[in-house]
Length: 210
Image 1: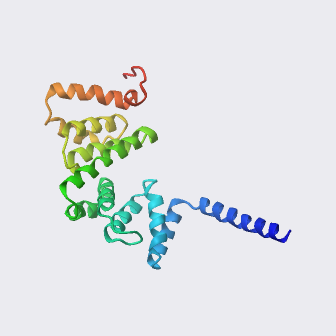
Image 2: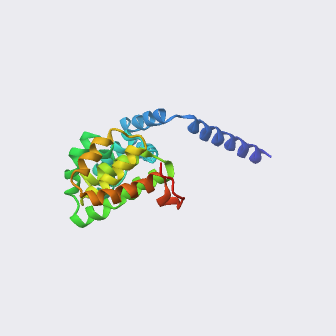
Image 3: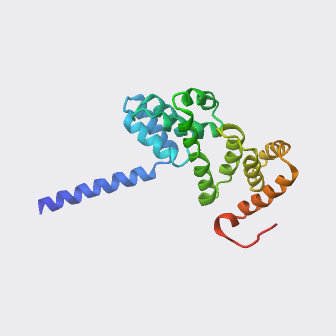
């Protein structure tokens, strides 16, 4: 009976702890990660920042890019450092943009190229599953500026999708890239952009031309 009572107490405190963790908002959780870091508990801070990075938290992604590069709270990993530096740079973080070349020098060209294939897959999945229109804009910017293999056609395509979805700051970027592409190809890209915007490409829906 005593053992059973102890088990109930343990279960109660575990339940209370889990619920209290769930009640924290992202800002509070991030601040907790910073406190862990400042106190030298780097492993716990890494876990916090990793969890928040999965939700797209910009500061957490920046922190991960540094922690993977320096081997703080986790083992040093240049591949992951580059991945998170790219994601951080796509968030407009100038420190990450400057750091990209430094990180890439730690890897050979084949590794960089192989790793670069993960970024558009990740962003396209975010756009598809979460209807994240900023991911469409980031894809346009990726193909224009950061991809090891610059692809202006794909850049135009994704800028077009993001403009259609309401990211109007991409309009000038789309038109600037479009000036470098042949008119006939532009027409094909506009058709594909419409299919992506209306999700026909992903879900096989009927024509939804506006």
